Image 1 (cartoon, one colour):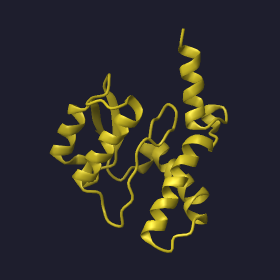
Image 2: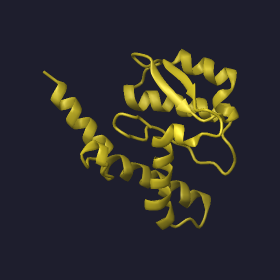
Image 3: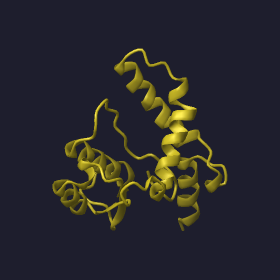
Length: 146
């Protein structure tokens, strides 16, 4: 999640934990989704996570640095340290997952994709003057262009 515009830039669903490979795939997808088909972010970007093994693995931290991310972790047993992510999860569960049909994994994954797209394009945020993440970014980009 981008802490400026609140866009969920990449995601994955699993019934188990997240391996280092999965985390690295999400990292790369987030960089590509934001900056295009590049191998590295144009400047160092902070990547804040909890202390899950997939996030703190040496290979993951090295990969993060290689693609322009600065890996940071929240203090142990301190989810409030990443309040924006915690709030996002609460919003997804409350506004989307609670209402979507989930008869099987394929349907659930398809509905999650729809939910993420709706969240990014339509879900208003008070911190963004009640604009969606992408609407906020489009307006910000258009106001900074000469």
